[in-house]
Every structure is written in structure tokens, then in C-alpha cells.
Length: 109
Image (tube, rainbow, N blue to C red; front, side, top):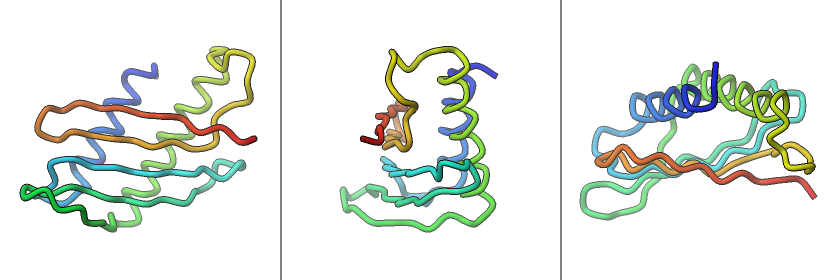
């Protein structure tokens, strides 16, 4: 599976798991080095512009972890690290209305 397909699956998972009134979602993820879980923060902006948090069900978190591990492996397997260590976390932003997806990777020091 390529990176674009993984991005699409992550975006769809967030749309499905997020609040119905979410206009923008922000997910902060820190993956465990073993790839068996991570720490997450799930925030969203509603229709009136208020920032809130949400708690997706365990299955959605597990599926997100699996997709992020696959994405991290894709970067590693395809030498997309520019000589740096592989990323350990990320901040995902999703504009629900415009279906615009962004991801910023975090690297361990």
C-alpha cells in the first residue's frame, strides 16, 4: 500500500470516528517504538469555532495505530528519511469540509 492510500485511509478513519459536528480535527500521535500502540490526543473544532476534544472508540485507535505504523514502515522501506532517523510521532490535521489532509512528522532527538 502506498503513502497516498494510507493518507486516505487515515483521513476516512478520522471522519468516521470523529464527532458529527467536527469541521476540523487535530490528532497528536506518539507511536511506541515497538509499533504496538501509542499516545494520542484528539481535538476538533466544531461548527461555531469552539475547540473541543473527543475520544474515539478503542477499535478506531487501534486501526489508526496500525495505519501509522504502516506509514512509518513505508517511509523506512522506501528510504524517505533523508538520512535522518525515522519519525516517532506526528500531528495530523483534517479540514472536514474541504477534505484537506495534512501531516507533520516529529522526530526523536
